Image (cartoon, rainbow, N blue to C red; front, top):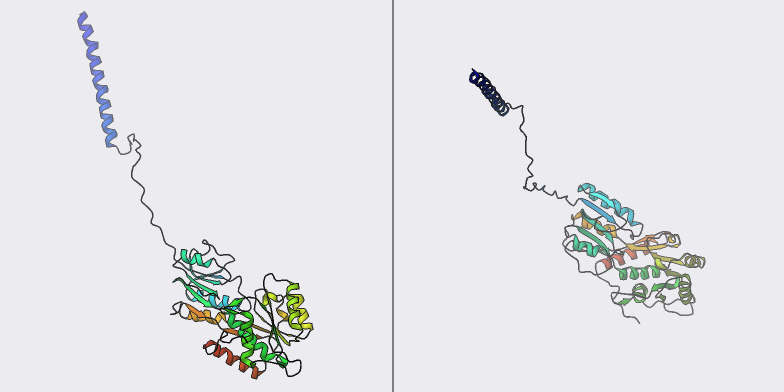
Length: 345
């Protein structure tokens, strides 16, 4: 009986263990089949590289107007011309105060006046950008640069002619920089314009002095230097005087007007003393720019010559004299005459 009492608990223990084991097995099977029960997941770092995002190229869609040194009165007209072209060609128009890479990174066209030299390096770095450069220099142009070429020798030649056509008794004077243009001194170029009109001009009344009378200035420019130069020509009593804008200092201009002189000058950015001037001579940059834009920048020659225009501020040119002047400008434009084709006497 004792052995029988021991066997019964052992059998019960085996039965209980069997039931527990079956319960665990069934529960595991249910976890695998039930989608709502999530198994524990191991975190594995992927060794694959992320897919590269393609770079989107921003097209050159800007037209930049940089002309801090462009003299009036053309700067406003040129701005309007460029704005109209930008609108017609779906370009964003902007004016800049400085030239650097960030400013012109997405520029399609850049318009620059000659006194800024940064364009040379920028034109090399941005070959897909078209540069329109106003310059009097003769330059080897890259393929992406178009030049509006101005000629200082043309300007001084015409200044001499205008001075002579207005001067009473041929009394023409000038104060000029001691520079040379196209291998000819500025004083000779100016004199050529006078001689083209009247040959060896001399007054009807004594003392007999051949005109023009010219003083030149080299180096620093100040009131004393210009006043001294004026003294050199004043003794010959000139009636008209050509004075480049950089010499048009207020004290000097006031003195000239008080002495009854007709003042002829070129255009400049600083218009403070331009009220003293009777005749202004400049370059028709807008006309040359329109020629380039009308061709949609596809002109055959990369250089477009800018010709001279005259502004008669006080209406002192008669109709007859104005006609003579227009004929001169036409002949100069066609190359029939040259500022450099005279030999100094």
